Amino acid sequence: MQYLIIGIILVLALLAIRLSNKHGIPALLLFIVLGMGFGLLGLKFDNYEFADGLATVALMVIMFYGGFGTNWNMARPVAKEAILLSSLGVVTTALLTGLFCHLVLGFSLLEGMLIGSIVGSTDYASVSNILRSKNLNLKYGSASLLELESGSNDPTAYTMTMVFLAVIMGKNLSVPLLILSQVAIGLGVGFAAAFLLGKYLRRINVQEDGLTAVLMAAAMLITYAAASLLDGNGYLALYILGIRLGNMEFKGKRDTVFFFDGFSEIMQIALFFVLGLLSDFGRFVQALPVALAIMLFMTILARPLSVFGLMLPFKLQRNQLHMLSLAGIRGAAAIAFAILVVNSGHPFAMDIYHIVFGICVLSSLVQGSLMPPAARKLAMLDPNDTVLQTFNYYQDKAEIGFLETRIHEGSDLVGRQVRDLRLAFDFIVAKIERQGHTIVPRGHVELKAGDLIVLGGEKHFDLTGHDLTEFTIPPGHKWAGHMVKELSLPPDSLVVMAQRDNGDIIVPLGDTLLMEGDKVIMLKVEQAAPPKARRFQLRKRG
Picture 1: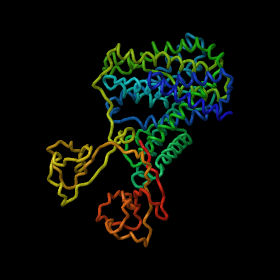
Picture 2: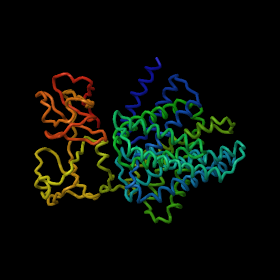
Picture 3: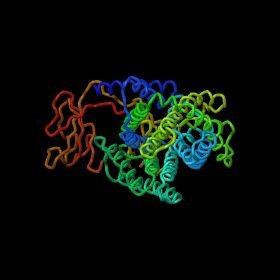
Picture 4: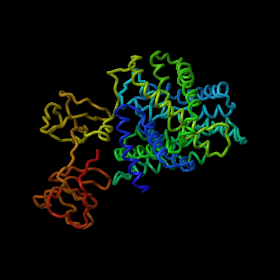
């Protein structure tokens, strides 16, 4: 029965994702409502320890992949502003909110500061979802600023939460030393892990059979664990690791993108659903007045004061400042931190989980709904603004493929112009790489020896179900040391590709020499595969 329920939940979650993408409603809100709905129907769940473990893993994936998907070329011009908002912005918002909770709502000072710290960061998933689903190309690089800020500010909120929780519980510690160790160790472990993994990816080929994605998952777990064991901020380390690897080009990156696209969606569905299921509807309604007061204060005063104050040296436009202020949506990280606080076992005077839960639900509903019309009202939409992508992005995400070929000395293409190539099929010369520089392939550009020509075209998906046969030429095999044209292949077979031991791809011509250890890929239409062969069905990979 439980498997039937899980299946129904996943189907409903997929419908919620489509609704979210179509209408720009934060997925957090839809999944939480879904979880609350199942709770009202009688599906009971109150295991905060399990929820804490799930939230930790989900935030690890969200932080790593949030960094991995950050285009640094777009983010660099607004990096100073984003980093300031993701650090001092969180601190300022948290302290102002804590004072409000203490002075207006009557919380103790430390518990008010704890609430402010928990909800101090903005939610990357919600902000990114709204920007992309509603195609909000904001002026002045504001979309990149918001994504970089919301993707990197959870570590600051986590550190503040740990500090105030430790003080409330009476732990004997040095607050400045705790903050310094969290930040310094988190940064150090993140950069070190990215450096080591980058060198490994350049030297070792783990592209086959999706092993690159497995390596990334392992690196993610090891990086978080290492930073946490050293008393550093594991989430910060993961975000740094993600940014460094996401802006690095390596073989197998496509597999990583597809793996984490699906994995991050599953983790978000599970996390948000469980957070909704964990809430008690009666206690949620009781906490709503307090949650509404805090959410309105943060939206109207705390966030705008932080944004306007900290952005003063950068002389941003007034309409941009208003847009940045409105985009401070609270989300999954805040609820996860609330679970962590509940699991500390310390008795609190208020219902922390349901207050934070209410703040996030109301923030997603109100601010998430207001962002698209506000962008138009504030004249922040720029139809000429766009998102800078790389060649690899389109291979990762779209039905576009790129091929490369090198022009060698003595080739009859040397000295010819691009316009003279007259490609017979629907391909285009996308770019030319020459001595480390990229050449725009205009018609008059002359080709030179050593040029790397990149061709672009539509990728193929085989609807016929023809098989590719792959096998490695063993020592003593009759093909070893012979050219392709000497193989006497039957009419229904063709050597499509070969790969050397070092990973080099060989496009087989008639005079291509096959060697021991070469991996040979053949198209065989009717006959069975040769001995020791593995059969692979052509399938869509994009």
